[in-house]
Length: 138
Picture 1: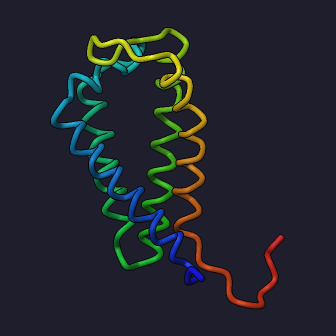
Picture 2: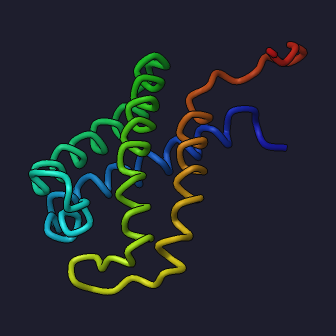
């Protein structure tokens, strides 16, 4: 039997690592990320760097022992994921390449519902575990 909270801990670590890796990549392959920023937004490189810093801070925040900081990091990452969602929709609608390389439409469309799952997991993994025998809040 899996100990209560283990699944949340694993999800939190995976999300944190994924966000930190993605955050670093914003600085390593900036042009690739800038290429998918919608044309109507100014300062593509600056936006990529800001979102990279946000992903790094959010990922680190998910690993801090303080539950309050974890929750703040979770909400920050959720806000970021919601903010970049229109860019992902724009890519799928217009079948935009990433850094000049075509991306399969199935990937472009398939990642949209996965982003909703990531948002939910990011929220869920910082919720306090239910106490045994406690009623589920309504």
